Length: 413
Image 1 (cartoon, rainbow, N blue to C red):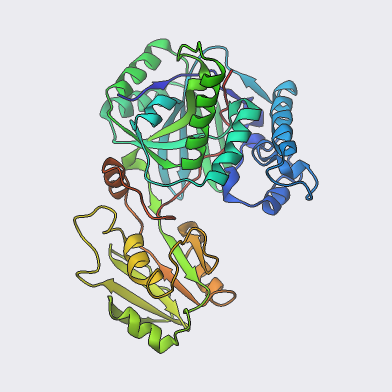
Image 2: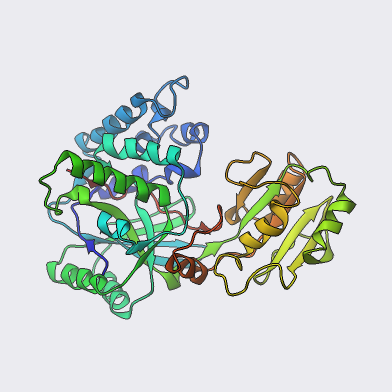
């Protein structure tokens, strides 16, 4: 049983939505964010990456950054750029990118569902990244960025959402970063009740993207419980901001790899090692994009190769071992490159599929030696692994489009 409830969103007034909306804090670095906010006084990056308004000498995790974030959030409200809805609502959030549409519901999910694994995870989190967002949420007294959740599609929810869209005008409809963003407000108590009751009959929700934001939101909620031992469970700090998308509307893109060197091997020696675990076919100078699971592209010395995993190099019945990212890590990245922990090793980098294979070629021609193009992990893979209580290797999934931050803010008190 999944808890999904309405809330009083603090959100931009309609004429300011496009000015406020910003990409998530973790898809750019501080220098990029400083450039992105130039001439944009209302950009939500002033909240999510508040160091942009401080001297570069200030440490990214200094208390000053979190205090500035709270100041900037409060200013959006005091200046009238953002306002709180008067009654709890659920929000419909549709994104269209390159002609593909995905429509989610914005509301709050329960920290207890996260703790009890009704909300299932598939990634490990890093303590340093958690600590940053814990401070951010705690100082702001708000969830400022939504968690990207998915669920197995449901006809009733789909029909209810489409009917509301057809009968009501959106409050926001704008294009940002090449993505159409449209929002409707569901303020009808009967419709809200029907949606929440339907989610209460759904067994599990799955984190698609935002594991660190989710873990941090839950830890802040638990901190607030300790600070308020008489809590009832109904306080807003018991819930966190989320957008729930049906799994059939989502797309996972490839998440590719580049390496700085061949770990001491010559190119001929390296290809010989590769042939022990893959069937190798040279395909020429045109970038090779894998067309099926267990196939890979490899760019080395100006030539692209098609690699096909040999039988016996993975267990087809193990949901993690049969992943392409696992096959590459277990058979190539660890034993040949000597990279045991790809999350921390500086010799490897990861390129989201949104950048295209030309980015792999650019990197190999500049600061890297070799690249691997991947076939995307599937939503079924993700949910199967989460259902099995297992964890994906790092950098297994890349979702597009990214959810815009600043359109919905959930206050914790």
